[in-house]
Length: 553
Ligand code: FBP
Image (cartoon, rainbow, N blue to C red):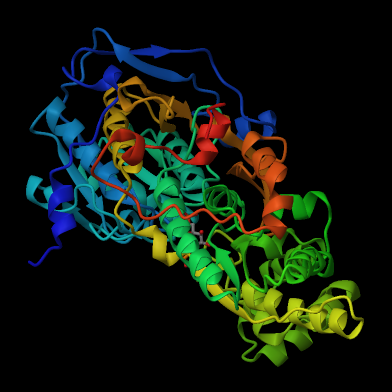
């Protein structure tokens, strides 16, 4: 098979492990803390998680322990791709084999459906070696199937019995790890000893808390997008004729947009969480962009860069309300809605079942944009915001507003815009050294959690702004991160998404500088991820995590 030079060279890279879990596998001890509580809704969650609620935190360090049992484990890659997934599997495989060469690792094909349908591959050293330190999830594929019906839970249990599994590791985001928690509970309820361990994956960066400092993939994806944004910014500054509207992935939270803004210093970066807090309408957002364009035009700078978080639409009050109403009525009348073949039919149907106010909002939106709001939800009930062309909507609305301002004599510049969407470009990039090390550690640590007999835990590696040898490995009970939320019209247990904290240092740092960036040309050009070279160039974590840990950036 042909492989690129970088791929071949990356095979040789040896990911770093925290000192506490490196070296002799039987010289690692586990420390167990006190029982924990969920974020809120304690009573309701205790009811759902009768066997797994409130487990203690676990931390590994050097000491006496025994991790040399023989295990059979199955691993799932779930949801959107994120750089480093292959290394989680490599770390898990190496941990299992280091503990006992007789241990076996199965990969479930195509995401959670592989567990339901018992579609597997048995990993060999040769397979693992061909994917070390590479991007993508292609080693076994991923999928968004949600294990939710009694039949699916039962089929999952059957698969574990057929394969004789001791544990299942689910590598996923908040929704997939919510599923992991439910699976752990179900197995215990049914008297099965199969353990379930999660690993925090998502480029969106919204699966984080005190114990999960970042989800893997965020670092690499943001560095990849920032390289592209920097290149575009430099092009804009060279030709001086285009305003670039760049939408960035991140289904709900704006962590990616904020991190890219800190790395590249664009003229405008919208932050969905701020839009919601200030209850900014669509026209106020357009106005805020026009302010920068008009001021720059006064300096003859008829060019610039605007970053738009993918999830923005769901945070604009009037559109949020519209989406919620659509979600509720579609959940109630799923079949009726799915029989409507055209957008016109859907629109007519909605005119009868949603509020007048929301229907009027729908009518004001360009049809190509409105269609995106009505497209199929993903299996977890989420609007597929990556399919909604928010950047084009804003380009149209800004142009319209500028024409008006021109007529009023307020704006005298020239406006030409180009739209971009960076999402899929970053999800399978070769993991940065940070993500390669972090993911390998998460996988290796997942093995230790299994060998320690734990279930319903998320693999946790902390102290991530220190050198990897000083990282701290352990486990966080999944129920500790949960609350009850409205989904498909019903209250469901879910892992709480971490949105951008408007009081946090990453946002405050951005807020302090953005008025200058809005008018002056202050672009930064971060360049591409460096894989080989001095640690201060190759191993630097994201600006978000550095700021959250009070480091100077
Ligand atoms: P996860 O939450 O599963 O990690 O996926 C995140 C994401 O990359 C979002 O940023 C994006 O909106 C979505 O996946 C796109 O989904 P798909 O790959 O199904 O088009």
